[in-house]
Length: 323
Image (cartoon, rainbow, N blue to C red):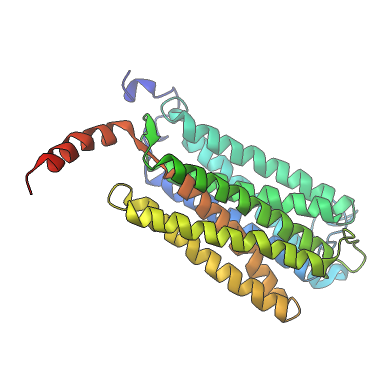
């Protein structure tokens, strides 16, 4: 069945292929998901977590912050407003993919996940406020945000690929190492969340902490972080040696390592300088970018089966040439 025959019914002005409109709004959606982690961090790090003490309104009698709420109300309401923008972008991407919901079912499902995830995020955000910034719910809120960053990153990769059968393009040991590295990254983020939940940046002077020892958690958080860096170096060396087979894999693995280098540097700086607000915020955003880069690396472990099959005869012929 041809790709054109899979085009679903819908308004003719909607794309019948992945065009510039889809690409632009997909990128905007990814950037907005990263940005909202930054603004969410600003809410917490400036003590504005209860700048709007109710939800979905800002105060019991006002949708927007009142002058009495001061700068904290503005910061918290700004983050809520950005959530609305993220939701609008998610809706636009779903609408643009409507006629492609059969031909590019993979992209349509990813777009729906983002849209439903944004709705869930808004609800979790409301629960966070209503529970007085419970540190565990705040941590879950961050995990959900990072997950959406990864899903939008996956969309960016898949929209550049045809929907064809893909097979592993790297040795099995490399694929296993890549997935182990992903698990270590998840562990690093989880311990980072627990460390932040035990530290001084609670989002509000009245908010509780999770009860763990922050100093101990700082060290525990660092262990998987260093293991992640070591495993990423292994992936980079392996990808570089096979760059002629999967050139994009080497590029993205190098980017992953670069993000981790900056992340480690920022982490050491903040730990040794009393957790300055700006450094902690940058650390949060870099963690999301590392997760996005890891997602892209995983998605580059496979290549279209037809491409690999076409390359094998030429390589066999080259190997048989006399030297």
